Image 1 (cartoon, one colour):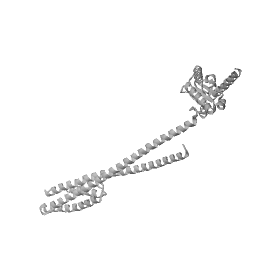
Image 2 (cartoon, one colour):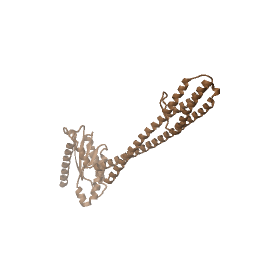
Image 3 (cartoon, rainbow, N blue to C red):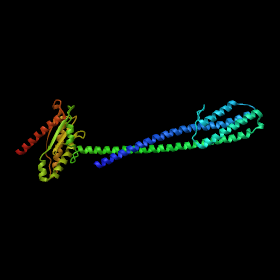
Image 4 (tube, rainbow, N blue to C red):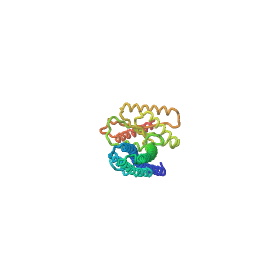
Length: 357
């Protein structure tokens, strides 16, 4: 991954974080506004209820006064409700509505309520036949209806605001979710790219096996080996001669073929790596000397079969191996050094045998 791409990804992540922060802030504001509007709607419902009670209670009061029954407590009850509707206080937990039309109609109703109370006093003094209480009360009832209607309109407007805020909040959350998913996908992609890069750092490009850096990491572990572990070192013979006489492409092919054969005979759970130009390392865990010998015999059979094909290049190798149980408090590095020593002894022995032929 180049520096330009890294900078681009960093800018995208920074921009995504900023956008996400802004969206979260907007969502918080929307939630606050939504809670405020919901509280206002609840208060409005109470106002509508009590504004309707005023009309019904006033009808009852007028009927009582016409029939000769005086009820000052009911008049005081109506005064308290109207005062609560006007100022938002009193004993009924009423709120004021921030609506011009409603407040205008409520003021007119309260003012006319004073006129109706004067008619009630006249009824008590003169009897209802000599007053305008019926006409005044009917006008008052119409005004009360208009006040209730204005409060209901305000409630509808508040409900519309709530729906708009809910929609905006849902859109905001949807965008946030999409952005978070995009960031997660981007993070997964970056993780995969980093993993691929990390693998490339530790993978030999010619053979696909772990390279020397990865081998060194394993042998850097200085803890004593627990269990039965074997380390085998392989060294290809005459690779330089093959490169000089047949070309490096043939030498590279020989290396790849040996790596393939070696990987085939060693169980996948065990480590096989290319330690150098012509050296390979195998670490076998939870094993026995017999299993190691079987693996070496299988490899020799595979190599012999490969060489019988009559190709230009033939595989020849030396090897040495060491077993952890043969040493006290043995580490992988010690095991590697022992195997490397035995490999060079095997290589010298093969050279001596070749000279004597």
